Length: 112
Image 1 (cartoon, rainbow, N blue to C red):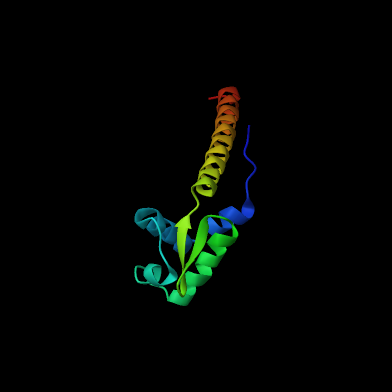
Image 2: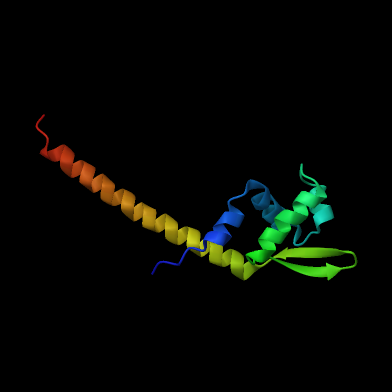
């Protein structure tokens, strides 16, 4: 069974800055735009915009804490993304095996 691919989710994950932010959140367990910006070569405002994208697709959850929001990775949505990636990977593996069989069949029918 193939998991349906969520283009918005993969568009969000496709950005290297957002992937790094997810890594940091997974390592630290949580973070704010301020704490993340201190660990990255981008401004706090840029981090906040990236967090908004990650929040919109459900990869992170925001909890208000004082003047900021504390973000955590949503484990269920991350697991969904991993399942989609595995599904896409196995689909492409099957396609590549088929291409290889076709190429081998063509090679066998050619005169030496």
